[in-house]
Image 1 (cartoon, protein in one colour):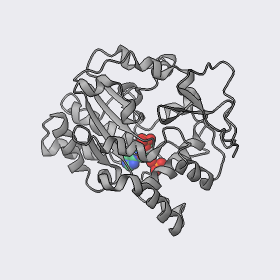
Image 2 (cartoon, protein in one colour; image 1 turned 90 degrees about the horizontal axis):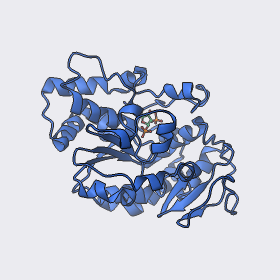
Image 3 (cartoon, protein in one colour; image 1 turned 45 degrees about the vertical axis):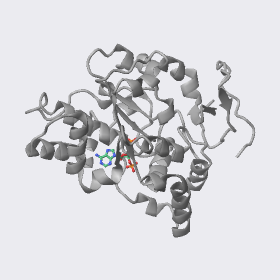
Image 4 (cartoon, protein in one colour; image 1 turned 180 degrees about the vertical axis):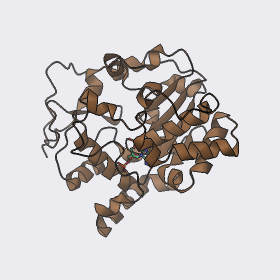
Length: 314
Ligand code: A3P
């Protein structure tokens, strides 16, 4: 690992608050580099696309629903649950939503990319907005907090997050990660990966659990019905038992993996990922895949590291 700051692509002008971080040769996408911005690790793409400047235009609305997470924690899963909870009436009798989740739920921190891809952006949405974000709590626009927008957060066993993030970073072409899992885990613990520091990410939302609905991936596995009810209560939606059963059924891993609106296969067409050589977005969807990647000692050390900062808030 180099200790030298990475050389960003020439066309980037680096604003004062963005600080170049050491380069990681395991990322094979040309020009990929990271920065520290307001305490978070952000990628060159965020800087190039001017994502944080665009956020200054964001005005939260009381009807906004925001699903937040550290990447690979179950965001897509919670988004689909939220969507079905809030649309169960309009979807009655239909098999499912007819528009891909990325269009229904634009990413807060990627407006210009979505414009490039001719996708919906939060700026153009006039109806109720459903928005996804991986930003740390302290980076959310102030108007999200003052507008009474509803924020939901999902977190997951950090070991499974790390495994899932590793495969994701190998799979997507704008990263092309080619290091080993051990390299990746070290970078995770050194807060070097995009959207790290992980512990502060989780902590930031858990500290606001008086206003943010905080859920876990493991709860969604164990008892999705009760998660669906919690989400409905939080969003002020009333559901019958049959509605809950229907939502539970339609948000299983198998159903979402087969559903072109939720399985991210469109990324193959857009060149975001290249085929299935490194796996697909809907990879395993299980609790405990970390057992295939960590020894007992590594697992213990990793959990200890995580719990030092987060356990007291759970
Ligand atoms: P794995 O890589 O462990 O399979 P995110 O949406 O935050 O990027 O998280 C993606 C992870 O959630 C992937 O984990 C994906 O398979 C899993 N996932 C998505 N939908 C799921 C579902 N309905 N049930 C279980 N896991 C799901």
